[in-house]
Length: 289
Ligand code: AHG
Ligand code: MN
Ligand code: MN
Image (cartoon, rainbow, N blue to C red; front, side, top):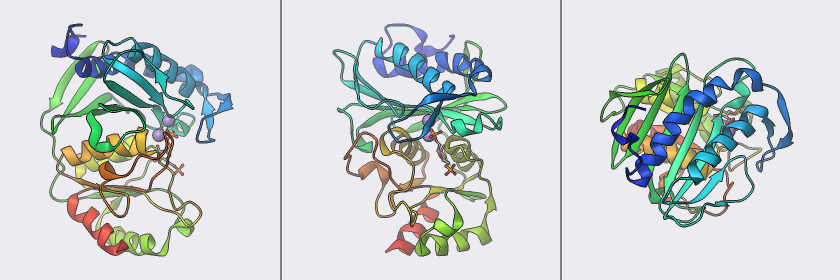
């Protein structure tokens, strides 16, 4: 992997990012043969695909082996894995949007690197990243307030976008859940946004978030009448993405405050999630007040 961080004595955070980048082509390469349902459910009670379990095992094996990583947790595992001595706690969504595998649509891998025990607050993130398995494999990394995009080709990882920021002029929106299940206050906000922006919703958070990062706009998996806490998980999905979008000059919210300030209650706790251009997120929060 020809990359500045490839040397093994790089700092632990760089080694986590480098390990994920190196594992991405393997995860991608193994998807075709693992579209079948596993006979298990994940801690969120969702059916797992063989690909979920496999990607999770690959990442667990590689990331717990890194000096400095003390904890590993995954959307696919009930409990935190003790990785020995180490100040870093790595939380992963090994395969985000795995239901898109059968329909051959984009999917992702999400990684949050916290310097606190899990479950942790988003402010405790020292780095966040996602891999997007789209027509090409890209990786977006937020660290020290800066967002960088890489193209991953085999064992090559090259930066293609430094200090990424959301475009000032938003273009796209993507809202999850079913329209009849949206709360009135979200539905009212959605009706406004639908008249201003173009619908881009692919059913995998990472694909949808990457469009917002590229074109500007807003992504939401909102509170629902049937599930006021929404669907997405704070530790594995909402925190890392909020960290990336805020580092790119955007904003995040759970409806009331930045996702990064949300109180960590449980490892698999769900949260409503709104991320994108600051003014669009502010409009959501004022519509909710
Ligand atoms: P995962 O496959 O990791 O469980 O994530 C799926 C999530 C997220 O990727 C996406 O935004 C959301 O589920 C889509 O949910 P719906 O199918 O309810 O739209
Ligand atoms: Mn997910
Ligand atoms: Mn997943």
